[in-house]
Amino acid sequence: YAGLATRAAWLRELGVTTVELMPVHEFDPQDAPAGRVNAWGYSPVAWSAPHAAYSSDRSATGPVDEFRDMVRALHREGLRVVIDVVYNHTAEGGPDGPVLSWRGLDNRGWYIPAQDHARYADFTGCGNTVNANHPVSAHVIQESLRWWVQDMHVDGFRFDLASILGRDSNGQVLANPPVVERIAEDPVLSHTKIIAEAWDAA
Image (cartoon, rainbow, N blue to C red; front, side):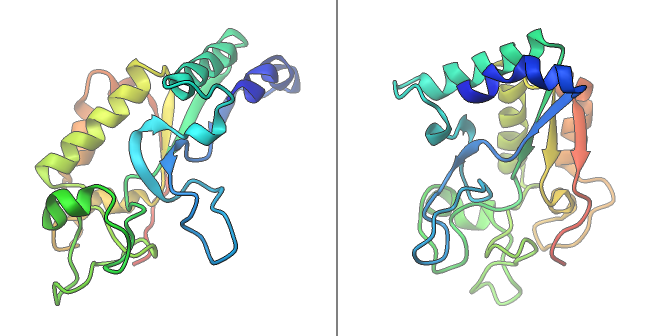
């Protein structure tokens, strides 16, 4: 984060107006083929925590402080900050994946099951699909987005596999998905830049 902050003026001089970051949620670097390390960030573990390994400040609040300082530096140069968010699946993966959080708390509430209920519906290609329109998960997604805007000062979001946000607990496409309506009607979020990757693996 500090490294990007030092390049803010240079980016402005190039004519850049918006910086979009790949996922910066805390993610599992071990979620990769054997002998490799995941550096992409598309295996989220915690939606409201900046990835600690991207911070040069190793103190307890270092990643949060350094991320916020980076956003301030970019804003001082007139640049907007958009982050890629992954609310469609988690690092818990398929049924043989690790139990890190949601699976252990409420497996059926957090993930969309396959028709046989022995596996997960996989509209993501990553082993699981978040049940984004369940009232609890929709609330957590909304609060995570609000945190990134209010506390971390980002200007917008690029939603990875955004079509997942339009599916119900059986995987069917909804006409008016509650989580999308929550975002659109939220007084904090309604003024942010929203970019949707308008497909999923189905």
